[in-house]
Image 1: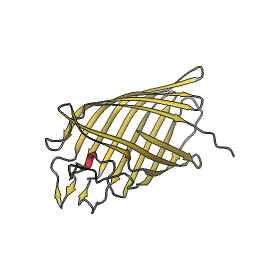
Image 2: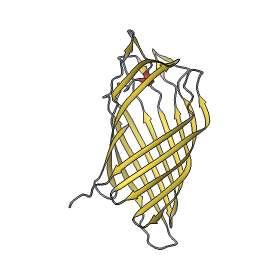
Image 3: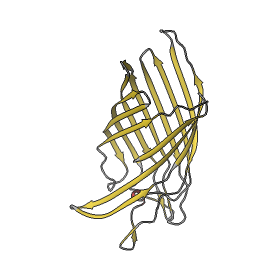
Image 4: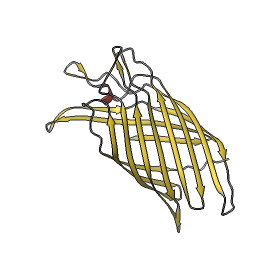
Amino acid sequence: MEIRGVYNFSNRLRIIGSLPVIRNERIINDQRQFVISGVGDPFVLAKYNLIRTNKIEENEVNHRLTIGAGIKVPLGKFDFKQKGALVQHDIQAGTGTLDFLLALDYTAKYKNGGVMFSSNYKLNTYNKNVDYMFGNTANTTLNVFYSKKIKKVTLMPYIGSYVEHGNTDIEHGKYEENTGGSLLFGTVGTQLFLNNIQLELLYQHTLINKLNGTLQLDTRNRVQLGVHYLFNRKE
């Protein structure tokens, strides 16, 4: 789960903060091995609109181009052990490293429809306490959407694709062959807006799985649910 907040300083600059709450569980042959729960690593990301058009003519296309940068802070525990041995790094609540985030978003809207593109890149650093470094990761989203207002409710269904890519991790100075790789998902979802409340439901299905090695878990599908409340800032 993720607790996220957004503050708009203006129509061009906003700050996004996120605090993940983690529950990772390992079960083998219907036997629970362990549970890791607690807060994960929060991040803060600043985004700035380089281009933001607001044309009201019916046959005009509006564009929005946003760049962003931020940091991920090492708050979650990264040294959980089972029977005296450190469990895999990717199941820990945190990474124990200060990492850096880059973001690029683009939206083009014509009448009630449009295209949304979003790409994020995370530069990971080295955790000397466990002699481990996660590979840098990137994810990219491309969706086509349509917005329709029905009385007081606005619906925005969308369909598209989502790509995740991770570089190979490094442990004790050597590349870990069962880490990193790429995943391509097909995406379908919808957003619902009612007054100050926004709901989002998203389903992703794996189309291409090119994870490195043979020991990584087979990712098949994902479901995400989001609930947002929008506060009105008083001047």
